[in-house]
Image (cartoon, rainbow, N blue to C red):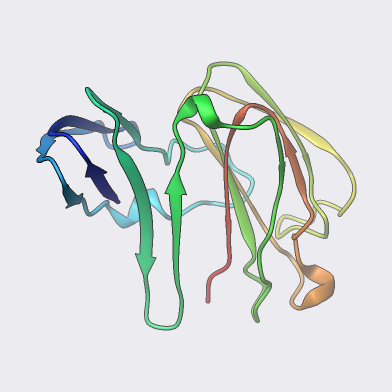
Length: 171
């Protein structure tokens, strides 16, 4: 995670799963890098987990996440909670073996999430068939593709609720 600030800012990073909290100052005009435990990234498909982090600051900051790996890398801009949408359509790429995925993160208590996977999931949920889960604040729910190739891709899946959705692929 990278945190940048135009003004000197006090930042707090909470990790509910481990109970760890870091607080530090990001000096004006700088970027602070914070390594996270790999357990934050590992998601068990279609299981409610607490794999989130919660970042707050006393002044506006920009937050980016990046994962730099040997054969693939990804990055994203982390939006403030107020900027989150209510209808999400996923975009990814389905390599071999099947590995396209998306993760939903609840920012509020009692969030009912309607999900329609575009194709068969790794837990054998049928594509096009909606289902609903309930997440509490800080909980995550990952969906992973179940079939290799273009016909098994999850691009076009929908996730309806006011929450954050991160899509991607891995090798």
